[in-house]
Figure 1 (cartoon, one colour):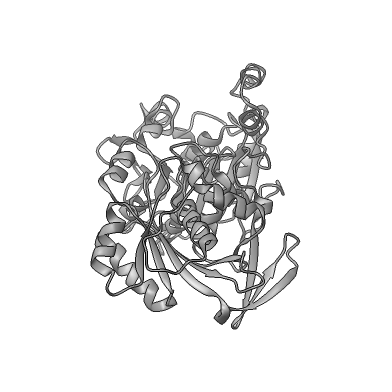
Figure 2: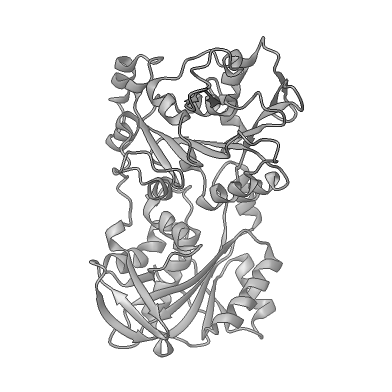
Length: 462
Protein backbone atom coordinates (compact mmCIF):
# COMPACT_ATOMS: atom_id res chain seq x y z
CA UNK A 1 0.00 0.00 0.00
CA UNK A 2 1.15 3.58 -0.77
CA UNK A 3 0.09 6.51 1.42
CA UNK A 4 -1.72 9.30 -0.46
CA UNK A 5 -1.75 12.95 0.53
CA UNK A 6 -5.36 12.49 1.65
CA UNK A 7 -4.28 9.79 4.10
CA UNK A 8 -5.99 7.04 2.12
CA UNK A 9 -4.17 3.90 1.03
CA UNK A 10 -3.45 3.17 -2.63
CA UNK A 11 -3.04 -0.50 -3.44
CA UNK A 12 -0.01 -1.55 -5.46
CA UNK A 13 -2.51 -2.95 -7.98
CA UNK A 14 -3.93 0.56 -8.54
CA UNK A 15 -0.53 2.24 -8.85
CA UNK A 16 0.70 1.73 -12.42
CA UNK A 17 4.26 2.72 -11.41
CA UNK A 18 4.55 0.05 -8.73
CA UNK A 19 7.27 -2.57 -9.43
CA UNK A 20 4.73 -5.38 -9.07
CA UNK A 21 3.48 -4.64 -12.60
CA UNK A 22 6.91 -5.39 -14.03
CA UNK A 23 6.59 -9.02 -12.93
CA UNK A 24 2.85 -9.74 -12.92
CA UNK A 25 1.30 -9.78 -16.41
CA UNK A 26 -2.28 -10.13 -15.16
CA UNK A 27 -4.77 -7.85 -13.46
CA UNK A 28 -6.33 -9.48 -10.38
CA UNK A 29 -9.95 -10.58 -10.71
CA UNK A 30 -12.50 -9.09 -8.33
CA UNK A 31 -12.22 -12.03 -5.92
CA UNK A 32 -8.41 -12.13 -6.16
CA UNK A 33 -8.30 -8.42 -5.45
CA UNK A 34 -10.46 -8.88 -2.35
CA UNK A 35 -8.02 -11.52 -1.13
CA UNK A 36 -4.91 -9.48 -1.95
CA UNK A 37 -6.20 -6.38 -0.16
CA UNK A 38 -6.82 -8.16 3.16
CA UNK A 39 -4.78 -6.69 6.03
CA UNK A 40 -5.13 -9.65 8.42
CA UNK A 41 -2.17 -11.90 9.15
CA UNK A 42 -3.84 -15.16 8.10
CA UNK A 43 -6.18 -15.78 5.16
CA UNK A 44 -7.50 -18.58 2.95
CA UNK A 45 -8.61 -18.24 -0.67
CA UNK A 46 -10.59 -20.79 -2.61
CA UNK A 47 -13.16 -23.46 -2.53
CA UNK A 48 -14.00 -24.46 -6.07
CA UNK A 49 -11.42 -25.45 -8.68
CA UNK A 50 -10.15 -23.00 -11.31
CA UNK A 51 -10.94 -19.98 -9.15
CA UNK A 52 -7.45 -18.51 -9.65
CA UNK A 53 -6.16 -19.66 -6.27
CA UNK A 54 -2.51 -20.44 -7.08
CA UNK A 55 -2.20 -17.30 -9.16
CA UNK A 56 -3.49 -15.24 -6.23
CA UNK A 57 -0.75 -16.67 -3.99
CA UNK A 58 1.96 -15.69 -6.49
CA UNK A 59 0.46 -12.23 -6.86
CA UNK A 60 0.51 -11.84 -3.10
CA UNK A 61 4.18 -12.82 -2.97
CA UNK A 62 5.00 -10.01 -5.42
CA UNK A 63 3.30 -7.17 -3.53
CA UNK A 64 6.49 -6.20 -1.62
CA UNK A 65 9.09 -7.47 -4.06
CA UNK A 66 10.62 -3.97 -4.29
CA UNK A 67 11.62 -3.95 -0.58
CA UNK A 68 15.31 -4.73 0.10
CA UNK A 69 15.76 -8.09 1.79
CA UNK A 70 12.08 -9.07 1.45
CA UNK A 71 11.59 -12.86 1.40
CA UNK A 72 8.53 -14.88 0.41
CA UNK A 73 8.07 -18.66 0.57
CA UNK A 74 5.46 -20.67 -1.32
CA UNK A 75 4.94 -24.26 -0.14
CA UNK A 76 3.38 -27.35 -1.69
CA UNK A 77 3.28 -30.88 -0.32
CA UNK A 78 6.08 -31.86 -2.73
CA UNK A 79 8.21 -30.05 -5.32
CA UNK A 80 7.01 -32.32 -8.14
CA UNK A 81 3.55 -30.73 -7.99
CA UNK A 82 5.07 -27.25 -7.97
CA UNK A 83 6.88 -28.13 -11.20
CA UNK A 84 3.86 -29.54 -13.05
CA UNK A 85 2.65 -27.75 -16.16
CA UNK A 86 0.55 -24.88 -14.85
CA UNK A 87 2.09 -25.27 -11.38
CA UNK A 88 3.57 -22.35 -9.53
CA UNK A 89 7.17 -22.83 -10.65
CA UNK A 90 6.01 -23.11 -14.26
CA UNK A 91 3.76 -20.07 -13.84
CA UNK A 92 6.55 -18.03 -12.25
CA UNK A 93 8.83 -18.92 -15.17
CA UNK A 94 6.23 -17.59 -17.59
CA UNK A 95 5.80 -14.38 -15.60
CA UNK A 96 9.41 -13.58 -14.74
CA UNK A 97 11.32 -14.78 -17.83
CA UNK A 98 12.62 -11.78 -19.74
CA UNK A 99 12.61 -9.52 -16.68
CA UNK A 100 15.55 -8.60 -14.45
CA UNK A 101 14.58 -11.39 -11.99
CA UNK A 102 17.02 -14.31 -11.74
CA UNK A 103 16.22 -18.00 -11.16
CA UNK A 104 18.41 -20.45 -9.22
CA UNK A 105 17.30 -24.04 -9.79
CA UNK A 106 19.51 -25.37 -7.01
CA UNK A 107 17.67 -23.36 -4.35
CA UNK A 108 14.31 -23.15 -6.19
CA UNK A 109 14.41 -19.37 -5.75
CA UNK A 110 13.80 -16.23 -7.79
CA UNK A 111 15.72 -13.10 -6.75
CA UNK A 112 14.71 -9.56 -7.65
CA UNK A 113 16.93 -6.46 -7.70
CA UNK A 114 16.10 -3.66 -5.26
CA UNK A 115 17.85 -0.54 -4.00
CA UNK A 116 19.62 -2.75 -1.44
CA UNK A 117 19.73 -6.49 -0.72
CA UNK A 118 17.82 -8.55 -3.31
CA UNK A 119 14.26 -9.61 -2.61
CA UNK A 120 13.30 -13.24 -3.17
CA UNK A 121 10.49 -15.71 -3.74
CA UNK A 122 11.39 -19.30 -2.81
CA UNK A 123 9.48 -22.51 -3.52
CA UNK A 124 9.53 -25.28 -0.93
CA UNK A 125 7.85 -28.48 0.18
CA UNK A 126 6.82 -30.43 3.28
CA UNK A 127 6.44 -34.06 2.20
CA UNK A 128 6.77 -35.26 5.78
CA UNK A 129 6.44 -33.65 9.19
CA UNK A 130 10.23 -33.46 9.54
CA UNK A 131 10.53 -31.27 6.44
CA UNK A 132 9.28 -28.21 8.28
CA UNK A 133 12.57 -28.10 10.17
CA UNK A 134 14.34 -27.33 6.88
CA UNK A 135 13.05 -23.79 7.42
CA UNK A 136 14.01 -23.60 11.07
CA UNK A 137 16.73 -20.97 10.64
CA UNK A 138 14.95 -18.94 7.95
CA UNK A 139 12.74 -15.90 8.16
CA UNK A 140 10.03 -14.78 5.74
CA UNK A 141 7.55 -11.94 5.59
CA UNK A 142 5.13 -13.86 3.35
CA UNK A 143 4.45 -17.60 3.59
CA UNK A 144 1.92 -19.26 1.30
CA UNK A 145 0.50 -22.80 1.25
CA UNK A 146 -0.81 -24.11 -2.06
CA UNK A 147 -3.51 -26.78 -1.48
CA UNK A 148 -3.58 -26.31 2.28
CA UNK A 149 -5.72 -29.39 2.96
CA UNK A 150 -2.73 -31.57 1.99
CA UNK A 151 -0.85 -30.33 5.07
CA UNK A 152 -1.09 -31.27 8.74
CA UNK A 153 -2.25 -28.49 11.07
CA UNK A 154 0.88 -28.80 13.24
CA UNK A 155 3.12 -28.21 10.20
CA UNK A 156 1.03 -25.21 9.20
CA UNK A 157 1.19 -23.69 12.66
CA UNK A 158 4.95 -24.28 12.94
CA UNK A 159 5.61 -22.02 9.96
CA UNK A 160 4.27 -19.02 11.87
CA UNK A 161 7.54 -19.21 13.83
CA UNK A 162 9.36 -18.38 10.56
CA UNK A 163 7.24 -15.24 10.02
CA UNK A 164 9.29 -12.24 11.10
CA UNK A 165 11.09 -9.14 9.82
CA UNK A 166 13.75 -6.60 10.71
CA UNK A 167 13.08 -3.04 11.82
CA UNK A 168 14.07 -1.75 8.36
CA UNK A 169 10.84 -3.17 6.83
CA UNK A 170 8.21 -1.02 8.59
CA UNK A 171 5.74 -1.06 5.68
CA UNK A 172 5.91 -4.80 4.99
CA UNK A 173 3.10 -6.79 6.65
CA UNK A 174 3.68 -10.29 7.98
CA UNK A 175 1.28 -12.59 6.15
CA UNK A 176 0.40 -16.27 5.89
CA UNK A 177 -1.76 -16.94 2.86
CA UNK A 178 -3.26 -20.21 1.66
CA UNK A 179 -5.33 -21.60 -1.17
CA UNK A 180 -7.12 -24.92 -1.47
CA UNK A 181 -10.13 -26.93 -2.60
CA UNK A 182 -12.24 -28.76 -0.02
CA UNK A 183 -11.29 -32.39 0.63
CA UNK A 184 -8.05 -34.13 1.48
CA UNK A 185 -6.40 -35.07 4.74
CA UNK A 186 -6.69 -31.63 6.27
CA UNK A 187 -10.27 -30.86 5.19
CA UNK A 188 -11.64 -30.86 8.72
CA UNK A 189 -9.02 -28.71 10.44
CA UNK A 190 -8.97 -26.16 7.60
CA UNK A 191 -12.75 -25.94 7.65
CA UNK A 192 -12.66 -25.40 11.43
CA UNK A 193 -9.79 -22.92 11.50
CA UNK A 194 -11.17 -20.64 8.79
CA UNK A 195 -14.85 -21.18 9.59
CA UNK A 196 -15.53 -21.71 5.89
CA UNK A 197 -19.29 -21.82 6.33
CA UNK A 198 -19.34 -18.12 7.27
CA UNK A 199 -17.98 -17.12 3.85
CA UNK A 200 -16.88 -13.71 5.07
CA UNK A 201 -13.57 -12.05 5.84
CA UNK A 202 -12.63 -11.73 9.51
CA UNK A 203 -11.00 -8.79 11.23
CA UNK A 204 -7.30 -8.03 11.48
CA UNK A 205 -6.70 -10.43 14.36
CA UNK A 206 -8.53 -13.50 13.04
CA UNK A 207 -8.24 -15.69 9.94
CA UNK A 208 -10.17 -14.63 6.86
CA UNK A 209 -11.78 -16.81 4.22
CA UNK A 210 -12.48 -15.62 0.67
CA UNK A 211 -14.56 -18.18 -1.28
CA UNK A 212 -14.10 -18.36 -5.05
CA UNK A 213 -15.64 -20.36 -7.87
CA UNK A 214 -14.68 -20.92 -11.48
CA UNK A 215 -17.02 -18.08 -12.48
CA UNK A 216 -14.81 -15.71 -10.47
CA UNK A 217 -11.84 -16.36 -12.77
CA UNK A 218 -12.24 -14.53 -16.10
CA UNK A 219 -9.22 -16.37 -17.53
CA UNK A 220 -11.08 -19.71 -17.57
CA UNK A 221 -13.88 -20.82 -19.90
CA UNK A 222 -16.29 -21.50 -17.07
CA UNK A 223 -18.99 -23.21 -19.13
CA UNK A 224 -16.62 -25.78 -20.62
CA UNK A 225 -14.92 -26.50 -17.31
CA UNK A 226 -18.21 -26.95 -15.45
CA UNK A 227 -19.34 -29.35 -18.18
CA UNK A 228 -16.16 -31.41 -17.58
CA UNK A 229 -16.81 -31.50 -13.83
CA UNK A 230 -20.27 -32.99 -14.37
CA UNK A 231 -18.60 -36.34 -15.07
CA UNK A 232 -17.12 -36.58 -11.55
CA UNK A 233 -18.63 -38.43 -8.57
CA UNK A 234 -20.99 -36.31 -6.45
CA UNK A 235 -18.60 -35.44 -3.60
CA UNK A 236 -15.70 -34.50 -5.88
CA UNK A 237 -18.01 -32.56 -8.22
CA UNK A 238 -19.58 -30.48 -5.44
CA UNK A 239 -16.23 -29.68 -3.91
CA UNK A 240 -14.54 -28.68 -7.15
CA UNK A 241 -17.49 -26.99 -8.85
CA UNK A 242 -19.20 -25.30 -5.91
CA UNK A 243 -16.49 -25.26 -3.26
CA UNK A 244 -18.77 -27.14 -0.87
CA UNK A 245 -17.00 -27.65 2.48
CA UNK A 246 -19.94 -29.35 4.15
CA UNK A 247 -20.15 -32.37 1.85
CA UNK A 248 -17.81 -35.25 2.69
CA UNK A 249 -17.11 -38.80 1.64
CA UNK A 250 -19.21 -41.53 3.19
CA UNK A 251 -16.51 -42.36 5.69
CA UNK A 252 -16.61 -45.41 7.89
CA UNK A 253 -16.77 -43.28 11.04
CA UNK A 254 -19.30 -40.46 11.40
CA UNK A 255 -18.81 -37.21 13.28
CA UNK A 256 -22.04 -37.59 15.28
CA UNK A 257 -20.67 -40.79 16.84
CA UNK A 258 -17.95 -38.92 18.72
CA UNK A 259 -18.46 -38.34 22.44
CA UNK A 260 -16.54 -36.23 24.93
CA UNK A 261 -15.87 -36.05 28.64
CA UNK A 262 -15.06 -33.21 31.05
CA UNK A 263 -12.42 -33.59 33.76
CA UNK A 264 -13.08 -31.82 37.07
CA UNK A 265 -10.44 -32.83 39.55
CA UNK A 266 -10.72 -36.58 39.93
CA UNK A 267 -14.27 -36.62 38.55
CA UNK A 268 -14.91 -37.46 34.90
CA UNK A 269 -18.23 -36.31 33.45
CA UNK A 270 -19.41 -38.22 30.36
CA UNK A 271 -21.45 -36.23 27.84
CA UNK A 272 -24.07 -37.63 25.47
CA UNK A 273 -24.63 -36.81 21.79
CA UNK A 274 -26.31 -33.52 22.79
CA UNK A 275 -23.24 -32.61 24.92
CA UNK A 276 -25.29 -33.04 28.08
CA UNK A 277 -23.93 -34.81 31.20
CA UNK A 278 -25.31 -38.31 31.63
CA UNK A 279 -22.77 -40.01 33.91
CA UNK A 280 -20.13 -39.03 36.45
CA UNK A 281 -17.33 -41.38 37.47
CA UNK A 282 -14.25 -41.17 39.64
CA UNK A 283 -10.97 -41.47 37.74
CA UNK A 284 -9.52 -43.56 40.59
CA UNK A 285 -12.16 -46.23 39.96
CA UNK A 286 -11.16 -46.66 36.33
CA UNK A 287 -8.83 -49.40 35.08
CA UNK A 288 -6.01 -47.85 33.07
CA UNK A 289 -4.10 -49.45 30.22
CA UNK A 290 -2.00 -48.39 27.24
CA UNK A 291 -2.05 -49.46 23.59
CA UNK A 292 0.85 -48.97 21.19
CA UNK A 293 1.10 -49.04 17.40
CA UNK A 294 4.84 -48.69 16.63
CA UNK A 295 6.21 -47.46 13.29
CA UNK A 296 9.62 -47.17 11.72
CA UNK A 297 10.16 -50.62 10.22
CA UNK A 298 11.91 -51.01 6.87
CA UNK A 299 8.49 -51.73 5.34
CA UNK A 300 7.15 -48.42 6.69
CA UNK A 301 10.10 -46.53 5.24
CA UNK A 302 9.76 -48.28 1.88
CA UNK A 303 6.06 -47.36 1.67
CA UNK A 304 6.84 -43.75 2.49
CA UNK A 305 9.58 -43.69 -0.14
CA UNK A 306 6.99 -44.86 -2.71
CA UNK A 307 4.88 -41.79 -1.90
CA UNK A 308 2.51 -43.23 0.70
CA UNK A 309 1.67 -41.22 3.85
CA UNK A 310 4.26 -41.27 6.64
CA UNK A 311 3.73 -43.75 9.50
CA UNK A 312 3.77 -42.62 13.11
CA UNK A 313 4.32 -44.40 16.38
CA UNK A 314 1.15 -43.99 18.45
CA UNK A 315 0.88 -44.55 22.21
CA UNK A 316 -2.59 -44.17 23.72
CA UNK A 317 -3.56 -44.06 27.42
CA UNK A 318 -7.05 -45.44 28.10
CA UNK A 319 -9.34 -45.57 31.12
CA UNK A 320 -12.02 -48.28 31.32
CA UNK A 321 -14.97 -46.89 33.28
CA UNK A 322 -16.21 -48.79 36.35
CA UNK A 323 -19.58 -50.56 36.55
CA UNK A 324 -22.24 -49.84 35.48
CA UNK A 325 -20.44 -47.93 32.71
CA UNK A 326 -17.71 -50.49 32.00
CA UNK A 327 -18.60 -50.46 28.30
CA UNK A 328 -17.19 -46.88 28.12
CA UNK A 329 -13.58 -46.16 27.19
CA UNK A 330 -11.96 -42.77 27.77
CA UNK A 331 -8.88 -41.75 25.78
CA UNK A 332 -6.88 -39.76 28.34
CA UNK A 333 -3.68 -39.06 26.43
CA UNK A 334 -1.90 -39.80 23.17
CA UNK A 335 1.69 -39.62 21.96
CA UNK A 336 2.04 -39.54 18.17
CA UNK A 337 5.57 -39.16 16.88
CA UNK A 338 8.05 -40.26 14.25
CA UNK A 339 10.69 -41.93 16.38
CA UNK A 340 13.10 -44.84 16.10
CA UNK A 341 13.33 -47.83 18.37
CA UNK A 342 15.30 -46.02 21.08
CA UNK A 343 12.73 -43.24 21.03
CA UNK A 344 9.94 -45.79 21.33
CA UNK A 345 11.51 -47.35 24.41
CA UNK A 346 12.01 -43.92 25.97
CA UNK A 347 8.39 -42.90 25.36
CA UNK A 348 7.08 -46.18 26.78
CA UNK A 349 8.99 -45.61 29.99
CA UNK A 350 7.86 -41.98 30.22
CA UNK A 351 4.20 -42.86 29.65
CA UNK A 352 4.41 -45.58 32.30
CA UNK A 353 6.04 -43.22 34.77
CA UNK A 354 3.41 -40.52 34.22
CA UNK A 355 0.20 -42.57 33.93
CA UNK A 356 0.97 -45.82 35.83
CA UNK A 357 -1.15 -48.17 33.68
CA UNK A 358 -1.90 -51.73 34.80
CA UNK A 359 -1.03 -53.10 31.38
CA UNK A 360 0.70 -51.86 28.23
CA UNK A 361 -0.16 -53.63 24.97
CA UNK A 362 2.00 -53.29 21.87
CA UNK A 363 1.49 -54.62 18.35
CA UNK A 364 3.10 -58.04 18.07
CA UNK A 365 5.26 -57.36 15.03
CA UNK A 366 9.02 -56.73 14.87
CA UNK A 367 9.36 -53.55 16.91
CA UNK A 368 6.70 -54.61 19.40
CA UNK A 369 8.32 -57.92 20.19
CA UNK A 370 11.75 -56.26 20.46
CA UNK A 371 10.35 -53.71 22.93
CA UNK A 372 8.85 -56.49 25.07
CA UNK A 373 12.17 -58.39 25.02
CA UNK A 374 14.02 -55.32 26.33
CA UNK A 375 11.44 -53.71 28.63
CA UNK A 376 9.27 -56.65 29.66
CA UNK A 377 10.99 -56.93 33.05
CA UNK A 378 10.64 -53.19 33.79
CA UNK A 379 7.14 -52.47 32.48
CA UNK A 380 3.81 -54.36 32.38
CA UNK A 381 4.35 -54.66 28.63
CA UNK A 382 3.01 -57.47 26.45
CA UNK A 383 2.04 -57.95 22.82
CA UNK A 384 -1.35 -57.91 21.16
CA UNK A 385 -2.05 -59.53 17.80
CA UNK A 386 -2.64 -57.23 14.84
CA UNK A 387 -5.52 -59.29 13.52
CA UNK A 388 -4.31 -59.61 9.93
CA UNK A 389 -3.75 -57.23 7.03
CA UNK A 390 -7.37 -56.14 6.46
CA UNK A 391 -7.53 -52.76 8.21
CA UNK A 392 -11.31 -52.48 8.03
CA UNK A 393 -11.74 -55.90 9.63
CA UNK A 394 -9.21 -54.97 12.32
CA UNK A 395 -11.09 -51.79 13.12
CA UNK A 396 -14.61 -53.24 13.08
CA UNK A 397 -14.86 -53.54 16.91
CA UNK A 398 -13.75 -49.91 17.21
CA UNK A 399 -16.29 -48.78 14.58
CA UNK A 400 -19.06 -50.58 16.45
CA UNK A 401 -17.97 -49.07 19.75
CA UNK A 402 -17.92 -45.57 18.26
CA UNK A 403 -21.35 -46.02 16.71
CA UNK A 404 -22.70 -47.06 20.11
CA UNK A 405 -21.30 -43.85 21.62
CA UNK A 406 -18.95 -45.64 24.01
CA UNK A 407 -15.65 -43.94 23.07
CA UNK A 408 -14.96 -40.64 24.82
CA UNK A 409 -12.37 -37.95 24.01
CA UNK A 410 -11.44 -34.94 26.15
CA UNK A 411 -13.73 -32.00 25.51
CA UNK A 412 -10.87 -29.58 26.13
CA UNK A 413 -8.71 -28.88 23.09
CA UNK A 414 -5.20 -30.27 23.21
CA UNK A 415 -2.34 -30.86 20.82
CA UNK A 416 -3.26 -34.44 19.85
CA UNK A 417 -7.05 -34.52 19.65
CA UNK A 418 -7.42 -32.72 16.25
CA UNK A 419 -5.12 -35.22 14.49
CA UNK A 420 -6.98 -38.16 16.04
CA UNK A 421 -10.38 -36.81 15.00
CA UNK A 422 -9.12 -36.02 11.50
CA UNK A 423 -7.87 -39.57 11.01
CA UNK A 424 -11.13 -41.03 12.29
CA UNK A 425 -13.41 -38.88 10.14
CA UNK A 426 -11.40 -38.92 6.92
CA UNK A 427 -10.94 -42.70 6.81
CA UNK A 428 -12.80 -44.45 3.98
CA UNK A 429 -11.06 -47.82 4.28
CA UNK A 430 -8.75 -47.49 1.30
CA UNK A 431 -5.46 -49.40 1.65
CA UNK A 432 -3.09 -46.41 1.50
CA UNK A 433 -4.84 -44.23 4.07
CA UNK A 434 -3.14 -43.53 7.40
CA UNK A 435 -4.59 -45.57 10.29
CA UNK A 436 -1.90 -45.57 13.00
CA UNK A 437 -4.20 -43.92 15.56
CA UNK A 438 -7.18 -46.04 14.49
CA UNK A 439 -5.12 -49.24 14.90
CA UNK A 440 -4.07 -48.30 18.43
CA UNK A 441 -7.67 -47.50 19.36
CA UNK A 442 -8.86 -50.80 17.84
CA UNK A 443 -6.44 -52.69 20.10
CA UNK A 444 -7.94 -50.85 23.09
CA UNK A 445 -11.48 -51.91 22.21
CA UNK A 446 -10.57 -55.57 21.73
CA UNK A 447 -8.62 -55.62 24.98
CA UNK A 448 -11.45 -53.95 26.89
CA UNK A 449 -13.98 -56.40 25.46
CA UNK A 450 -11.94 -59.24 26.95
CA UNK A 451 -11.71 -57.38 30.26
CA UNK A 452 -8.71 -59.60 30.92
CA UNK A 453 -5.59 -58.47 32.78
CA UNK A 454 -3.85 -61.82 32.70
CA UNK A 455 -0.20 -62.35 31.93
CA UNK A 456 -0.65 -64.29 28.69
CA UNK A 457 0.01 -62.79 25.27
CA UNK A 458 -3.37 -61.69 23.94
CA UNK A 459 -4.36 -63.05 20.54
CA UNK A 460 -7.03 -60.61 19.45
CA UNK A 461 -9.84 -61.99 17.31
CA UNK A 462 -11.14 -59.57 14.65
